[in-house]
Length: 89
Image (tube, rainbow, N blue to C red; front, top):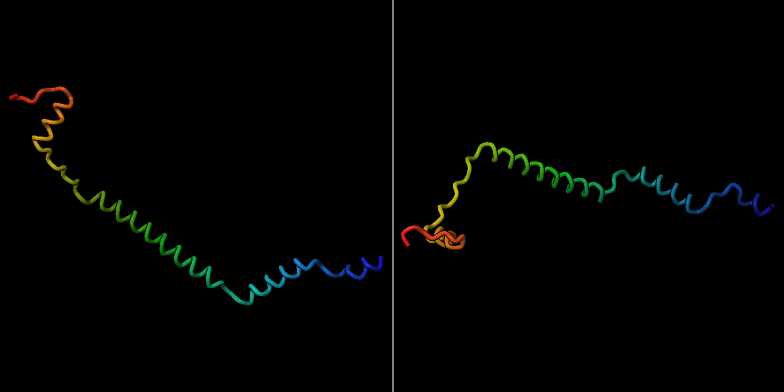
């Protein structure tokens, strides 16, 4: 009984440390690591959004790329593969 009365007003040490951490966090302000993380994350997000917007703009405004003409030699090979003889042979 006396043992319980002696420690009745004390909380567990882990809670004491948690309260101290909370008090220290309010005094110190922002964590520098958090600031760097937010800055890098914001820059990365801005870069990705900018690239996407530029891509969408380019799709609307730039003309379509022209395909390279297929050489006659390649056309002959393709026809032979399909089993159709090339004209003139």
